[in-house]
Each structure stands twice: as C-alpha cells, then as structure tokens.
Image (cartoon, rainbow, N blue to C red; front, side, top):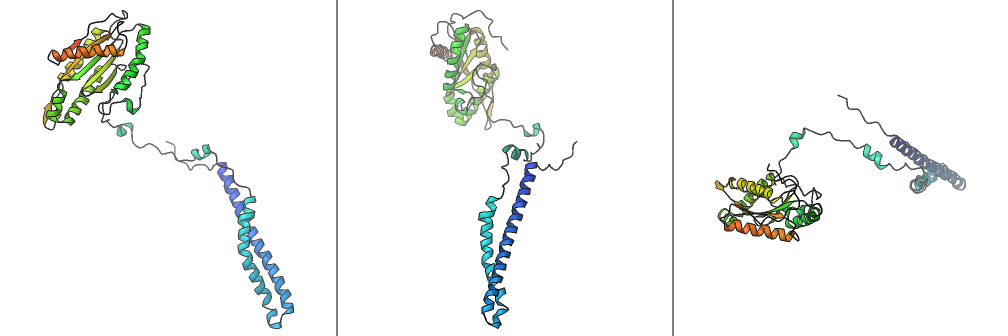
Length: 315
C-alpha cells in the first residue's frame, strides 16, 4: 500500500512567495531610506538653526529638529511605500484554475458500497417507451405512485403512433381500474387507499417489460401501453396483473386490506384513427368488465392486425 506523501509545492506557488518576499524587502528599504534621509535633513537644519541660537540650545537643537522631521516623515514614508512603491513592483501571476483545482485535497471514500445503499421509499417506476426519455423530469411522474402522468403518457404514445404506423407493428393498451376504490378509501381512509394504489402499481410494473409504459390517469385508474404486443398477448398481461392484485394482502393498522381490479384491453389496429380511439375502446372494455361483476378482464373487438409478426410471449 503506498504511503501518503506531502504534496509537492507547485512552481507557481514558489514564484509567488519569492515575489512577495521581494515586495516586503523593497517596502522596508524604501521606508528606512525615507526616514533616514529625513533624519539627516532634519539634523542639518537643526545645526543651521543652532548656529544662530544661543549656547544653551546649540547642543540639543539639532537632535530635536531631526526627531521632529523624522516623526513627520514616518507616516509619509508609509503612504509613499503603499501608494507609489508597491504598485510599481511586479505582482505574482494569477493562479490558473486548473492549478487551484489540483491542490485541493481529495477525500477518500469511507466504507463500502453496501454501507451507503438505501432503499427508496417510492416504487421503482417502469421504463419508458423505446426512444422516449429514460430519466424524465419530476413533473412527468405521478407524485404518489411513480408512474407516468397522463400528459406524459399521451405525448410518448403520440410519438410511438407514427412509428408503429410506419413499420406496421402491433401494439395494445390496457386500462386498469381498482374496484370500489372510493369505498376502500371510505372504510380504511385515504392513506390506506394510497398505499394500496402504490402496491398495485408496483405489481403491475413488475409484470411489464422494461419498455412498456405505465401511467396513472387519476384516481384508481392505470393505463398501460404495450408495444410489439397483439391483443392475445395483451389479454395475457392483463390477466396476470388481475391475478396478482387479487392475491395482494395489505397489512394496515392491524387489519388486512384487500382489493381487486378490472381491466379493459384494446389492440391498436389499422382502423384506429388516433390514440383517443384506442383509449375509447379500452374504456368501453373496462366498463364491460365492471358490468360483468368486476375482478375480470374484457377486451374490445380485435381490430385488423398490422402484420403477422410473432405476438408477445407470456413471461
């Protein structure tokens, strides 16, 4: 293991220190020279005055005048050194940003990756549609479930629409609704309803592929876009989501909360003019599932297929 060494002093730092020493010496010499010159001038002036004064003042007058002149010149010497001499001295070159960054001490990581791992409170959101954003901004996500918002879903599937039309690919749409969601909130509280919706979203997300798109349309309604999936493959996905939710048991404040979902399935065919028509078909199939007693899956009439590529395999 290599031992820690004292960092070498950069050349730029040594030059700066040398220039600072030169500046300090120059200022000191300038100050002393000014004071000495003033003292000499004052002493000479004192001797001239003593020649015309009485004998009693002849001895002390030169020293007094020299001291007075030196006292006046000391602050003047300091002012001159600061305002005149110092600006004319060479200054150290500005330190480049790269050199400043290189002198910063880098802290070594403490502990291992396992000690810093934290489990997120929110469920891991599903992946985006191929070609869509992989890390969308916060407004694209539902604050409660982590699923995409309706606005983001519509924008993403609109982009997909032209692609599946251009390549004649199969795709399908699921509309999932929590049965008696309002009753669940009334009996157990909205917090329990929110927790149940988060778990249902997590189960649905774990059933999907990485490039399927899961969104929340509000309330207890989830809408799922399944690219490269024919209606039969979409029915299989819907049934697996329904079964997983039916087996869910949520422990809440000493009680067990259960829920079921109804699912409407619509395949995207050549007869659909746009996304709204597919959502309408999925909504109509969902209403049929509700009318059939809930906790079941219903599909809209199968539209003409785009091509004959293999359907999605159950997995």
